[in-house]
Length: 280
Image (cartoon, rainbow, N blue to C red):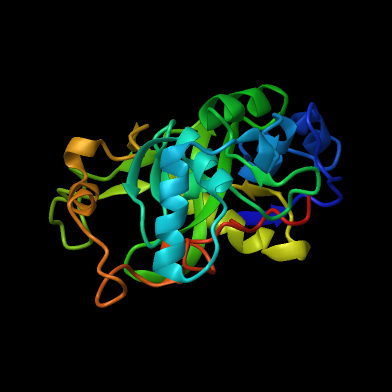
């Protein structure tokens, strides 16, 4: 398997044809997986906003005040309003905002980014990343596309690439019913392929101002396995999400995890958002 970045992409603006820009810069093959950072997808789809587009309501002001009390840092209630509008559930409201987005992803601040946004204050995630992946795929000779983002993980430091939308391949491959090296039948192994492809792409894409927003994975073989598009856990099956609903922040005495765990570099979980997309 070969993984390489697509060079020379310009700053992406609303209305740009991402597929054409990619197609003009790399010789793609039908079996390639094209991993595209959510930041450039959002920019092309006009998801750049100013703070003033989100006049704060009472709940946003209350959340901002609570975050300020918890972290000792001033919080803009307009940012809290943007997070509220992009979320279906506020799973945690302090010491950072952990939310469920409208397409099922759970992350800090609804994935809203404040870095790499030269034309505004805020960059929102694509409204429907799976549909975005489909549109990009329609314009490429490659038949598989993954829209990626970066986020932290519970129980581990640091961030990694994850998939938030995909087209042309299942999200996971199912090893259940097959045998391990000792002949025992596998009973639980379902491999999240799109997340692993996103993580591989993020290693090549890099972070900060040297990042590149599009990476190609060549010669990846799904294999003769059953596949599934199950990716985001249903609420009924998500024991961690259920537990967090009943959890209360205790002011830092054994409370929430570190900022690395939550996906950012400050006590809010990182308003300046993800990486691997800085070179657009």
